[in-house]
Image 1 (spheres, helix red, strand yellow):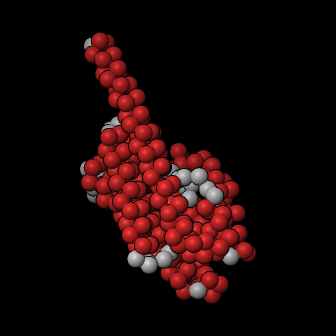
Image 2: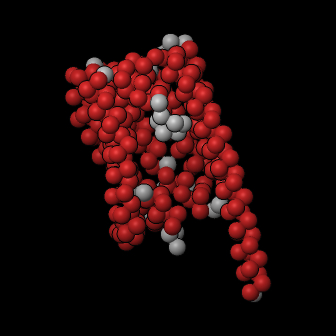
Image 3: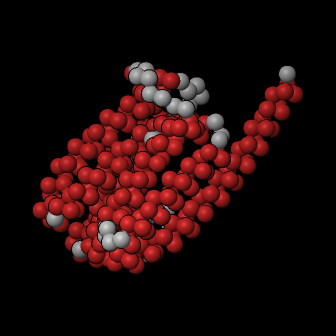
Length: 261
């Protein structure tokens, strides 16, 4: 019995090492591709259009505080995952996403008067996309618990590469900043679809207070840390876009390394 346990542990360790290397290689390739495509998009669109998108995205990512509880990480760390735990996390993300959309709807009126109706529309569309991506953390967590890094890597490459190529095409035909908005929404849709299809997770309505308490015991300290991180990373971009205009926001985001925008 001890020998069998040792063999299983060794096999698990090998899968983890190989999977980690595969995931790292995939993320590196995606970062290089995204950097190249991002440079092309920034040059084609110019700082004004690129900056408008960057400014609105900075606001959207500040609203990402609603998703800073990291229930997905809590699911990966859980010793005994269950359908109830997954469903409770999914329902929590749905509720948090709904609250995020309500706040965005209120902010859209302010944004419409300050930057015009297009900026307000960008905000609503992007937040709806982020809501979808928020719920995708649950099937993604289930997939990562199985150490299927081949599927995780494939999903990441497809969900990042295809929308970027689509954005290039839309920018080339003259869609302007809408090319970037479409890219963001397509990323969210692909992440949710691919992670759900490959993880096998299906929401069955098994939601409970006990499961929510278990999630929150892990999520509370994570919420504080991630909120501080979001504020440090995004407040300056919102401030630059608010006081210096779209072009300044576009130039600021151009200077970011790959993956940070």
